[in-house]
Amino acid sequence: MQIENYISGHFQSAINGQWLDMYEPATGEVYAQCPASDMRDVDLAVYAGRMAFRAWADTPAEEKFKILNRIAEKIDESNQVLAEAESKDQGKPIWLAKNEILRAAQNFRFFATAAMQFSGESHISENRAVNYTVQQPIGVVACISPWNLPLYLFTWKIAPALASGNCVVAKPSELTPMTAYLLAKICVEAGLPPGVLNIIHGYGHEVGQAIVEHKEIKAISFTGGTSTGAKIAATAAPVFKKLSLELGGKNPNLIFADCDLEIAVKTTLNSSFMNQGEICLCGSRVYVESSIYDLFKEKLIAAVAEYSVGDPNLTASKLGALVSKEHMDKVLTYIRLAKEEGGTILVGGEQVKLEGRCAKGYFVMPTIIEGLSVNSRCNQEEIFGPVISIAPFETEAQAIELANSTRYGLAATVWTEHLSRAHRVAAALEAGIVWINCWLMRDLRTPFGGVKDSGVGREGGFEAMKFFTEAKNVCIKLNSATK
Image (cartoon, rainbow, N blue to C red; front, side):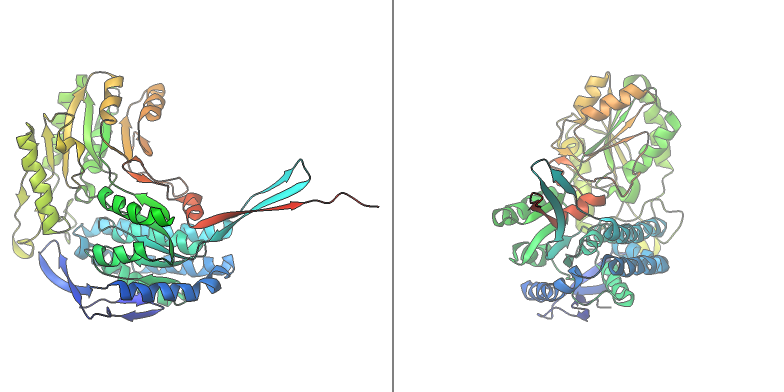
């Protein structure tokens, strides 16, 4: 099977006629191809967006709502097909992919509604003037999304960009392009006008770089690694493009002795290893108050031992395959490094060898490491796999110090039944998101993003709509009354 680019409402191969192999992580086998596009394809997509922009920007909000909401409905109708494609492309279990497809539909539905609610402000000045603010769409914008939650994060960017009146050139990861291709087909069925959304497939250093450099693209929303985000900023900032960068994380879980132990263990299991640990919000550093450290560790190890790794097609599989052989090798390298740094593998630490169709798949056991120093590479660098470290702390102050000890600041989780402590710790943590006694509970109205090396800007709710628009103030002086 060969999937195609989506430009100006049409499906087409790359101008250069080149293709990239698409691997199924669970089997290690090529199952499809996507275009190996280049700058010429990006130029076509940008031109299509420019030609469609004025008409889409002037489309009434209610009509935008109807189209975007139809996309949401068709995503829901295609949940099984999209989930199977996502699982095959990315390696996650089908049951988990179904949940992510639900969120993709929610993204479109939420911002379809936002298109009808987004508004400016007005102010009456004491000097007899009226000031009003309008939020105007930028033009052609770029959305570049990662491979870990392919359709979920793709729609998280595209939906607000379209809802606020922009045209989009979008690039999914070359590792997981299938659901973006299927989304393009849904957009055609839903009646999205040609050129409003354009999807280009290919390598990041070819297509992604061409998008970032293109002079007609006015804003870039990117989710991915911190090093790639730095390169994008270095290219885009000198020409004053708007940037929203959601980057890496090395998120702490702080477990205090007064927590609900059973729920804390169960949720920490999920927050550590869901989606094979390939979620930027996963908690990869677990710090436990010393008085319950041994008990918590014992319960967590026991829970991990029952966490099955297997064929993503099987309902019983809690963890599927890592996204690629290269990524699996990276994760295994960090596990070896952890041993060199003085860590002890409490559970896991090895590649999983399955039989049958998954014999060549990229599976790794969920792994817990103890005894690492706070400054070890495995405690400072983002591994992005089913690997966590665990360590005790003595005081609240020490817990906060440990939590803030990395260059990242995306998310954190705090487990305590003490109300004042929860507020104190949340205020002291250097993170864009803090969950208290829960994890991954999201309200789409709230801002999403990190601090330090975890990113620039915020997504979600009206924060996303504001990013994809420019605020213009209009001031009208009121004349004095005349007889």
